[in-house]
Length: 112
Length: 118
Image 1 (cartoon, each protein chain N blue to C red):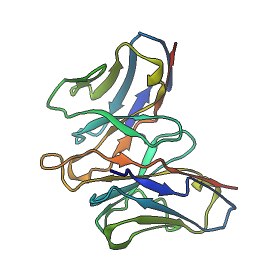
Image 2 (cartoon, one colour):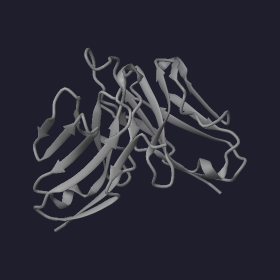
Image 3 (tube, chains in turn purple, brown):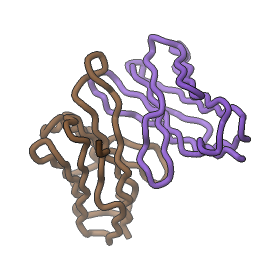
Image 4 (cartoon, each protein chain N blue to C red):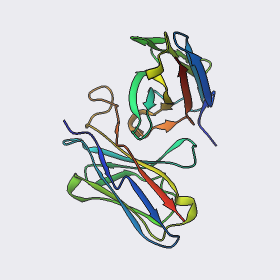
């Protein structure tokens, strides 16, 4: 039973376009929602994170939108660049447990 | 500051053999986590150390897996005997002590060890 469902599995976007990746969760006790970016041969690296007391967080070209009632959150990459091509994972954790529950990942390709 | 390091980067073994993976967390990080990604699926939690103590090992698949963290520094994950389904990428992550409000939730991941069991 997958507690965090991520879509799409793969995404191809033209340079300058908007990339949108969606995640949905089941556990209402989750209170921390990070997005990780992974390049080939590297480990996942924290990109941006949000807590459920806000509905949106923006850092540069990256924005998380959070809908607590729908139990959904999404990553928007504005003005996508070829250098953004990577695998993106959404995740969630619950209070002091702190273990991350990951989505299955989205392979993003930004075409030049 | 050095990041999380893992050794080896790749390991190919035969079914029934033993393999030991090592993780060196960022210096000073009390929290150390092991995760595994199998066949392109989601990254799954294995266990969590706080210093040298196992805080949560609910994700360990079975008793063929043994994790240790000597003196609260580096950690090892031993698989004995290895089975075909153990193949995957094993990630280690570390974070400073804290729990969101007073510290940080950011987990810093190593590059992973790709394990192939033939």
